[in-house]
Length: 150
Image (cartoon, rainbow, N blue to C red; front, side):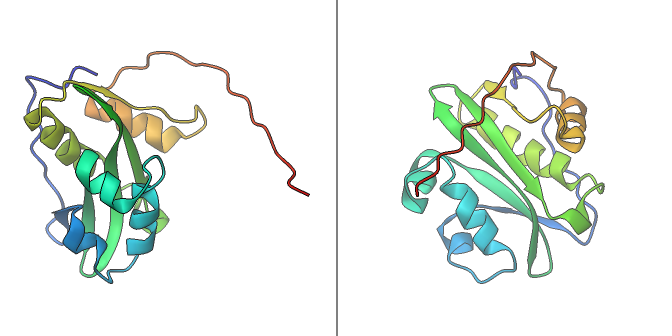
């Protein structure tokens, strides 16, 4: 997706708010913060590495983090997005809005090429990507390898 030149304003329902993923958030005790911390190291060596090289936002309702979106595989003016929503908060448009916040931030940092990969069977993710403005690029085969360490 070429993210430049578009409006990335966020419009959340009144009882939700957007919060940047920063050191203070990651040190908090908000509900689901462990899931967010785990995601920060899904492709980074440490939380500190994430904070130095990546970025993201969460949507919160009260003291609960309900959805999050983060940049991944940042290189130059390009990144990928990783996104998740707690099941009981799905189908409220929250993922779309949090992704818009991340894309707007990315554009402000000079990122203008953003990728979104998901399983073909992950229809909510596919719908969210298309709603935001991503285009289906291609389907590609994957291989699973199970390594038995016994």
